Image (cartoon, rainbow, N blue to C red):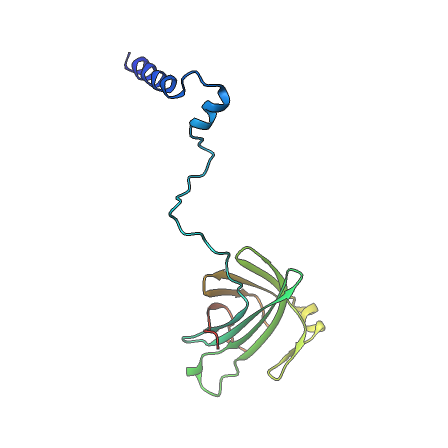
Length: 168
């Protein structure tokens, strides 16, 4: 009995609100659950800033990350770092990798590519024996690095959280 009364009241209110207007006019009056509700006072969100730039990891293990937009949807990644400074000069820990890949949303997925630097070199043959990849997940001014790169000296680790350096 109570359900019938509630239904009757709801229908009465609906008819009163819509009156005898055509269906098109009634549809404009009724709120749609599919229409997003926007607050006119809400600030307009600016497009996300480019993640291109330099990042640093601090703490027990230090390192640097450089992200560059190579154009055509491709990104280059350069990572350096590895061992903990407290392990001293006897720790062979410096490591570097270069990678190239694409960005989708907040992630850059890349494959390690051959390179030659003052720190170390990685050849095509090295990568054929042990292919490696790196994922950079962007979180505001931070970049979370996850890689399976295994050509670093013992205990060297490039994985971790890197924070964007202030513009110079």
